[in-house]
Length: 254
Image 1 (tube, rainbow, N blue to C red):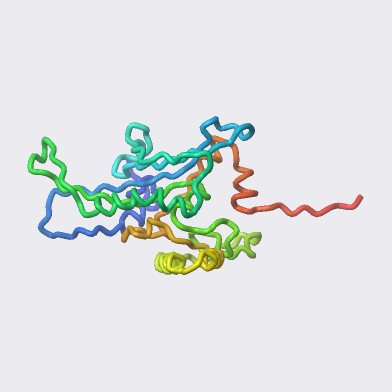
Image 2: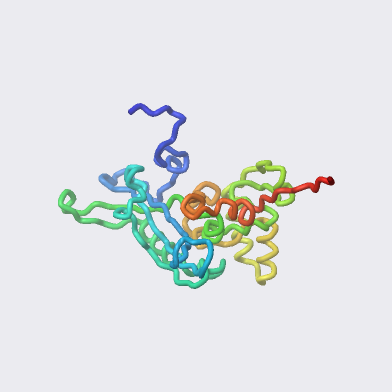
């Protein structure tokens, strides 16, 4: 099947994939394997998808191999359940760092490579692993990657749109990975919680454990998952309360 150049049907065609940097660049190394994963972070109600009734949240962190064909990326048999996050409430922004930290520690080791011995490679084959996109719905993505809430002055993870201009629906100047990392580092080094909150309110950025991964670009390696809009029918809730879009009604005098 011939695919038009501008049509992207697989993440391996994307700029993020093609520009992903690897720590190992040994010209003499041969036969190595580079594996790229996505991480999915989400919370769900163990009592079902009903909008009414008892509400509790249990979270999960799932890894999916992006080296597989797109039709297999998210099949249960090819997904790795890395962690379950106990309820009954979702973790706050400080707790999520402790939850993600073990994953980051493992990824830092895996990026250095390890040997796998198989039938075709009895002497061992070097395998390197890196993480590309974090896939979550808006609130989970902001917590995991290190962005502020939708009430921050700069609420968007991709651009510098200002909260006061939200109703105009104008796209702001694109954020750079360097600016995001600098703002995250400033938040981390702030000596008081009040200063951290002030920095996050102004920049829309807080620290995330994912910043320890040298190849991660917070302005590119995030993807908004829209699963809840389809499966739970909460599109209105996302638009009105999560994203802050409000309709302005004008009373008509009779």
